[in-house]
Image 1 (spheres, one colour):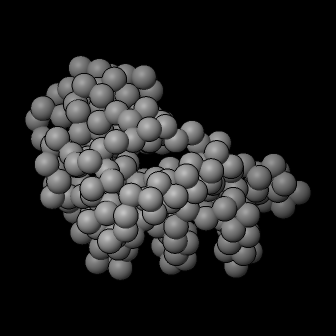
Image 2 (image 1 turned 90 degrees about the vertical axis):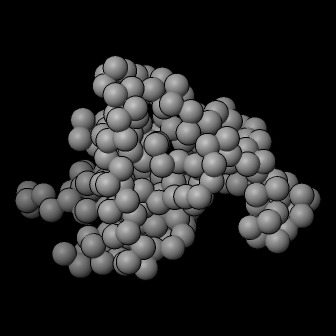
Image 3 (image 1 turned 45 degrees about the vertical axis):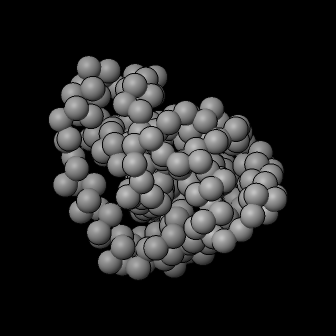
Length: 220
């Protein structure tokens, strides 16, 4: 029996309010499961999450999503509706349910909480909870009560979560991480960086992730 290979290091750069990030994460996890099933665990992976803000200057109350997307991309409400239906269908294909989302929001506090969750070994779980709360239920990821509830739901200490949010903890760490990825040329998300040198951009289908990860693993 051959020895297990060193796990692939996968950096997932994303934002909570990015629909393609929700699709990309579920798609990537589907690909990783397929790899595990077909290789007997020979191709392992260490998944790390990193912050990216689509709307860093947005006020706490957020903005109507149709107005925001129309201004940002120069498209009308009909085109936005078509795009959102396509996103809904893509999400469904990888097991992610999109609900009604009327506003988009600032996510800096969510990223601070995710940083803390990483220190507590619950980052992946919190990431899923936040994506589901916003994209599935239309909840506000800048609302600290929403954030605390999501943290508690994945086994994090509720009181400590409140303290993190109230204190401004990990703001410097989040800003530093954001600068790091921007300086490396990451300007859209999701961005999946494998072994610090292979970039897979966008919410790709599971087959694309699987093929790319197999090729990278084979390179050693």
